[in-house]
Length: 118
Image (tube, rainbow, N blue to C red; front, side, top):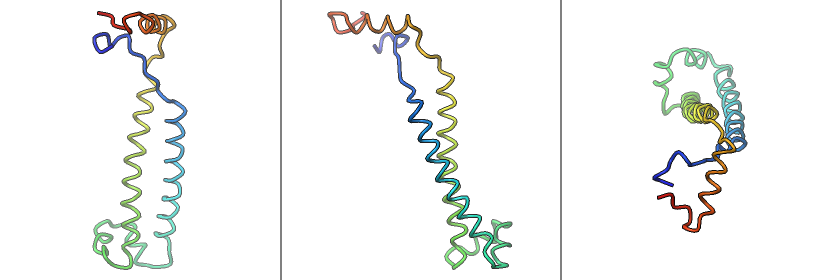
């Protein structure tokens, strides 16, 4: 098969990819809510921190550190989600095998030589 890559057919796992994206979305929604709750607590300092990353970083290691840590967690999850989304969208553009492609692969697999095309 390595010598005849044009005959290769691969599954896209559409339903698993979609399920993965949906689970990641649910997790991000939860983290977004947590971050919004943290930012909106009755603390004037937190209002300032939600608009100034420089001020937020100053509080690393303090009681107000949870806001920065939660933001960094969201940032990491967003990166993973966006990568997965772009991969999924890219896979969706790959053409499905034609009936002829499937027949060629079937014929190749049924050869007595175990599918050797050489």
